[in-house]
Amino acid sequence: MIRLANLKDLESLLDIENKSFDDNSFAMSRQNFIYHIKKNTLFVYEEKSLVCGYILLLLRKNSKKIRVYSLAVDKSFMGLGIASKLLKKSFLYALENSKNLIRLEVKINNTKAINLYKKYDFLHIKTLKSYYPDKSDAFVMQKVLFS
Picture (cartoon, rainbow, N blue to C red):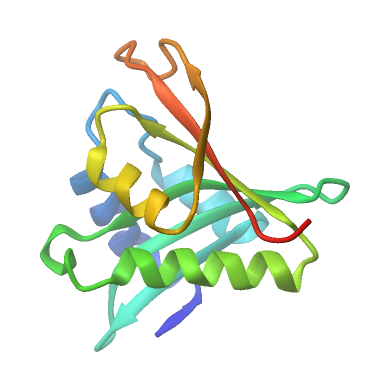
């Protein structure tokens, strides 16, 4: 089941975050999660009362795009289509909010994520040099939902 995150999910979100992102990426802290739960759109995928993954979406009022700030799935639940389900939820949420474009950044060596995004018609639109703290580059990818 996909639902909006709440503060009771905090420990599970931190656990997924810490297992998913190394120190050289933009890993979120407890305070970051609290802020995003209260101020932005953070969906969790829950299976048998366990939070297995999440997607954090950032919206601007006067913009037609949504930014996927973060998407992560607990390693023990990978390969079950959870990331795909969360992405599909973001498409639906974008349409419900009259947003026609979804954009994200991904490390250029994260081929698993890049292939997932390509599967859902995300296109590489530019490369950000030394984007991450470890100086690795990022691809900016986007999907147009409607024109």
